[in-house]
Picture 1 (cartoon, rainbow, N blue to C red):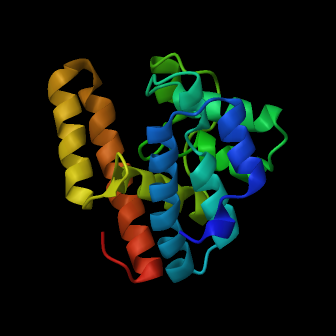
Picture 2 (cartoon, rainbow, N blue to C red; picture 1 turned 180 degrees about the vertical axis):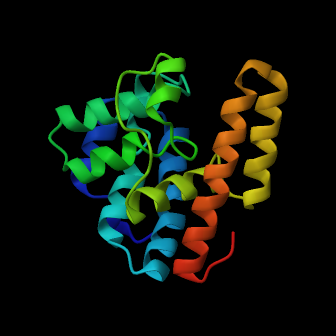
Length: 180
């Protein structure tokens, strides 16, 4: 990634919240992949990169998979970031979460479904980065299958997630010409 992308406000926020080094590396890897997708998709590259770099700031306060994206949004809103970036962070989880699913998982009320192209790009890129390494989309699907095996009462959610993720992947592949 080009050095200028790590703007001072992002680095200062990471430091202020003591964001772990592995999460920083993950965010950078997501931003690198998201930037490639955004360029190929004619999306707002700066918005995508900044959103990707900040999408997991909530992991500074929780690693709960069903809360970290909510906390990311809360932190970014409190810190005065643009609402477009806040929404990228709030909507990046897996392939989104409907209002009904949020109620089931006791997530605070909100819209957690990626809607804009930029939100979808960051969500997809996040799904393709394991730690700080890019992987194929099939590995993401296998990870979801493993979660379903270990959490049988969440199988319905995993199936919905897979459907949404496949749709999002197809949409972005059609727009960008890239294959995941």
